[in-house]
Image (tube, rainbow, N blue to C red; front, side, top):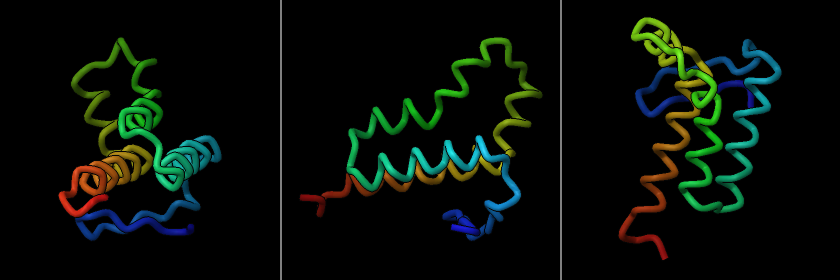
Length: 89
């Protein structure tokens, strides 16, 4: 995957991300593809935030605007919508 299109329509070039960020996104993709429990996907997706107990409002805003966070949040949101859909069987 070279680009990721968010639900908002914004396209993010994944090739510009660090290797560790791309690996993190790939782990989330694999969990979703394997139909993992939503809470497991959520925990894995946002695990890097656990390291940030010293966040400030400014640093959280900066994190929220990073391409990696935008992609992971979008993936988790789409997964939640799919898992909670009344047509899901």
